[in-house]
Structure formats: structure tokens, C-alpha cells
Length: 278
Picture 1 (cartoon, helix red, strand yellow):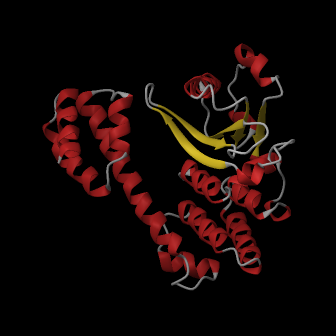
Picture 2: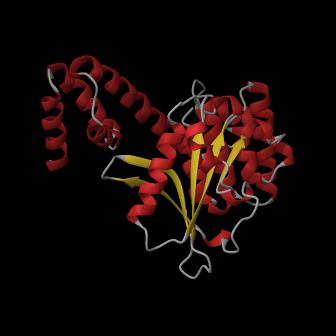
């Protein structure tokens, strides 16, 4: 399940959602602008940056990181990206705060002593989704977050139906679309009709199903192509990986055919340059 994509959609649609996880949100929380920011010089990408409105009294920028797998380098990467962003934008902001969202506490890096001053500074908060309680007892936005972390099929279906009912009562079409997208990722082996029947949706209602299926196809194609490329030309530099991430499904299929003739990274570079110039 591509949870980063889900959380991007969540934060983009509801930027105020992050501040439901923060103990002391800024007064202008509802007016913050969410962005996924790439620091091109180093090929770093920050999961979420919440930018204060121009008229904010305190220009505090918030950083979010979503982690659903073990990564011992997480804190190294997060703080490197964070401070590099602040360096590139030093005159725009006067404070910062970081929120790291873990599926569970077990996914934290084993050793955090080198970052203890930052982690204990009061400027960083770690959130563990599996410790937030029942999704049915949360606001809709947090309920969606928790749905991404439900592993039991029965619980996922029950939670989805509950969230859909709440969204319908509040006439929140955006929530309905996001709930549907999440469940499509969780049950990627089911057809549109099977998912619609399982959730009690009209077939014309879940537009998000079609979008998620298409995105899943692109991601599946990309995974296969990258695996084959690694076998043909070895490890791929971040700069080339970034270009491959931006290819459409048709371009990925073309790359899958072309790579059979590759023997070096230079072959891949030439092919990508041809796609850009073409």
C-alpha cells in the first residue's frame, strides 16, 4: 500500500489535519499551506512542509515525515532535509517544528542518541498511529490516518463503512473519495465492482477507485522496470531515479522494452534525455 501517496492527498486536502497531532498549534493553523518539497541540489524530498500564511505573527514552518517501515537512517535524513530547507529559505521563517508519524513505536530507529538534543528539544513530536485508539472515536481526518494502519480485513471494512457514513452525514465528498482510495490500495486484488459492493457504494460514486487503480498500475510498472534496470546497469543514481519517478505508464512500458539493450548507466541517461527532449 502506497501510504505516502495517501498522506500526501490527506495533507493536501486538509492541511489543518497535521495540527490535530500538535499540542500547541499556531493561531493561523487553518491557513497553513501544505507542500511536498524537493531540495534539488541533493535530491532530498521532504514528505510534508506546512508553510505559514504571509500575515502570520510567528512564521513557524512545520515539517512532517510519515514512516511505515524500519529505517535506521530516518533521523539522519529528516534533520538533514529539514535544516537544508531552512538554510535555503533562511530569511522567510523564524521557527520550526517537526512531526514524525510512525505506524508503530517499533519502527523508530534503534539508536537516536546522536539526535537526542533535537528529539528532546520540544521542537519535535513523534506520533504512533497504533497508540491513538479506535478510529471511530477520532475526528474524520485522524480516522483516515488510522485506517491506513489497519491490517485486519474485517476491521478495515468495518472502519471504512463507519468513515463513509460519517462523511455522508457531513456531506464531505473529499473524505468519501479519500476513504475509497485507501480501501482500494488495501484490496488491490479486488475489482471496482467487488469493492463497491463490499462498501455499499454506487458504481458511479467512487471516482477515486479509477484514479487509485491507474496510480497502482504506474507504480507496479515502475517497480518492475527499476528491478530490471538494477540487474542490467547496477545501482541507479538519485538524479536518474528522480527522472524515472516522473515517467508515465506509457513511458515506463517503453523503457521496459528499451532497457534490454542497455549495458551501462550511460545508455539509461541517453534514453531519458531522449524522452525529455522529445
